[in-house]
Image (cartoon, rainbow, N blue to C red; front, side, top):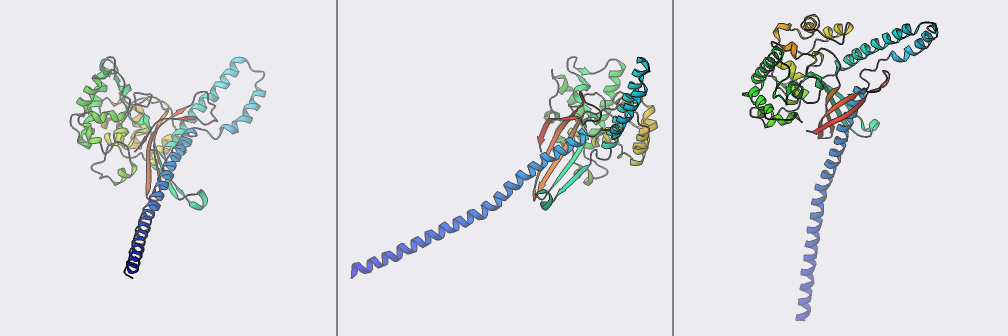
Length: 375
């Protein structure tokens, strides 16, 4: 009897232990599942947001590819055929002149069309909202297109073989003074000390071109840009009117193919440095009617850009004419692309280049991604 009672007690204890172990396992599985499912959802949203950000880059590429395509090109085809039949009896010289005139007008029309396309969107958010029923997922794409021709190209500004600013004599001195004055304005806005001297020393020590603008963050004084590397339209809107932020990659570039800056394409930070407001839409629209792809300074500033920016040429830094472009024709652009799904946002900054080699005027340009940053 004694042995039988002991066995009964043993079975009860084992049963309780098994039940306790089962409860522990069930609790562990419930705990893991409550963590896993939100984590899995977050991972899925991250991947979707990443794809949307890359999709935004394709939207920007498409806009740039078709930016200068003139709609009237297709309509001109029948007229060309008809005129070709009528001109059969003309001399070879007359035919050549007739062919050259339309080509020149097309080039001007393309530049005008590109500027007309870029002006409303340059430096501003374009937002695409996706609906689950129509697009397969719920999310948002935001893109912001900027031109690298509206920024200062460090590599075109400095001769790394002679270790001096480009140009010679008076031109070189004027350019140097202009850069010094620009850095004075940067100092007031960003608070950086001795930026010009630090940059000049940095460039003198190099034997090759700057590969990336973010290299400047290693220079003493430029650490003030550590939180404002990439331009943000959101921060621009929330900024204090008296102290507007400056962005490192919005002032400097290494991607444009020109030493000069195009006033049609000034970046936000360059306008801030020159104390210029946003372009007046009405004045810009009027200027577009008589648009020409070449400039003379200061005449064209006083005739065109003083109305757009509400500033006289004399209010700009002295010697600025050496830094302003003489022809219109942007090729390199930077793009901000944000993809948002749920609470997750993926951000990227990319450099895009338009390739118009062997291209008919009616065809879109090829757009290549030169560099991409996840930010």
